[in-house]
Image (cartoon, rainbow, N blue to C red):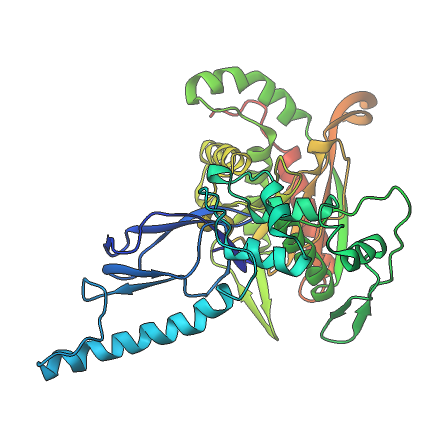
Amino acid sequence: MGESVTEATITNWLKEVGDTVEMDEPLVEVATDKVDNELPSEAEGVLVKKLYEVDDVVQVGDVIAVISTDGDAPSASPTTDAAPVQETAPLVEIEAEVVAAVAAPVNGSTDIPKSNGNGKFYSPLVRSIAKTEGISFEQLESIQGSGENNRVTKKDILNFINNGGAAATAPAKEVATKTAPAATKTVATTKTEIHTPEVPVYEGDEIVEMDRMRKLIADHMVMSVQTSPHVTAYVEADVTNIVMWRNKIKNDFLEKEGEKMTFTPIFMEAIVKAIKDFPGVNVSVSGNNIIKRKNINLGMATALPSGNLIVPVIKKADNLNLIGLTKEVNDLANRARNNKLGSDDIQGGTYTVTNVGTFGNVMGTPIINQPQVAILALGAIRKVPAVIETPYGDTLGIRHKMFLSHSYDHRVVDGALGGMFVKRVADYLEQFDINREL
């Protein structure tokens, strides 16, 4: 399901109980906070049991369905043939164990009925939340569902709770909300414990629960800072030649290739060249071992419309020319913005690039994307006065310049390597041939 993904929401069952299922045939659609996926069947047979319903949140690794590989629903009925009994009995026993172990927590007791009798269905997750929060069936009926056929989803009922809808029947929860978070949260690390302070809530403040993707990002960032001693080196690069060259070819390139030539793939090309020169930044740390990566898989941090962040990966970027990098950058960026990335698109990165200049920032101190050991932030390109060396002496001129901010893991990347690498990237950018042919 992708790195750091621990749970998914079932959005649609593609097969019903009793349907025949082929090997690798799509069985169910699930959504995570990063990507949506169709999960293929791992067996050929008949679907005999669904252990979760649409809108249920399932942990990665959970059993979600039972398939009879005999091609029919398993039966424990007597038979006169001893051999078949010996073959089918284990299947029945396994199914019973799986159903008992997995279905029990899903179908926990609740006073909320599954349906209102008029076709409005409430999933086990929604009913469980309603019971925990003290929401009555009448209040549940009043919630306008955003799911299929107006079905109430987890998001709907949490919004209802956050907006005070459950206050009348859950006074204890109301008090907790007004003072939240009163308890001190403890985050365990390998060396010590970090106690987060109590945060007061004042009149007029609004408490908004993080969505799952934001929680994952927060956990990942905290983990990265605790894991790696971060050091950041800065270099300013003159990219005037690149700006002039792109302005010269961008219209012809769009007409010829059907793609926009942005600055990002040009920068990516220089970064790949520098990684080849200094492969020590293209590694990972596992205990006391250093894993030297064979391929250069560039992650490109991409902001989503929701404000969250995702890092699709250009696989084997060192095998691509500038046109290939351009097509990959545009494709991944477009699919990220439209929530069309697959799980493979966000895995396997060995070095990450983030373009803080997109938001007008001139430099930044990016956090390493674990388990990588370095990340480069690209600042905004600015017109600045600069000293220009000529055969006739120094003169002043207007140049296009940008800052490169290189954060690296000081456990394995020392100052010399970290500094020389980012300087080499700047050198490649400044040496760009303004007369280059595509």
